[in-house]
Image 1 (spheres, rainbow, N blue to C red):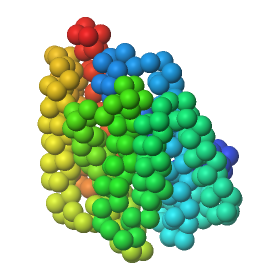
Image 2: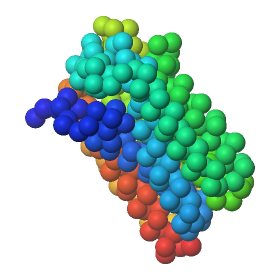
Image 3: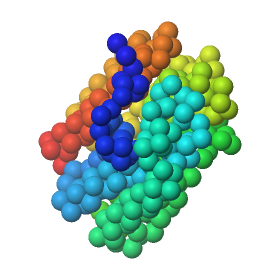
Length: 292
């Protein structure tokens, strides 16, 4: 079976540039955002915040994809998985992509202006991290850490929007999301590792080398421990921890299918994290329903 990431899409170039034809990244960003909203709202986040943050996830994920392709415009043509993207293929100019990035940031800004001052201040920090992330792969083997911080930034924003407060407990959830992001994006980087080595792109997949699966396992263990700690801090019950148990079983599955480090297998392990995020949210939401 061909790696889905290498199959050509027939969607409009702008949709492909924003990856709206491949929503996996949106899902992976949406789940931890929902975790944060449910913790911040004690299981009952406001409908307004739920709508604002869901639309914000779509806009910011699209913006992140656009600026990533802009940053990689000179190297994407040399990588098997990315050579048909809109910028290297000539369907969209780099200038147009940059304009689209700022339009998407404007959409996100309009959404965040519907919240409160603290959330707006935090949003500028989040936008800065999102814009910086694609350029980290030129200077450090830890671009996945930058992505993790960008992914987790929704946590303080959710608490700020919901309660206009930043309790210390939220940083445990923040750390869990960072570790989870580094783990699943290392799987993603393993797909491109050979190409990245040839063109000089850095990643945790390259840094970890033959210890990649071991370190991913350690990161995933940290995710479960941190989420368990967050559950205790926020007074969660059995259903929440059952959700973590299901997530652990998916982590084990990912290691089983990626043992040979085959490109398709690593990509499948990456995709499986959608189920991880979903089951953690299902357990959290169900637990708040029966244990407010």
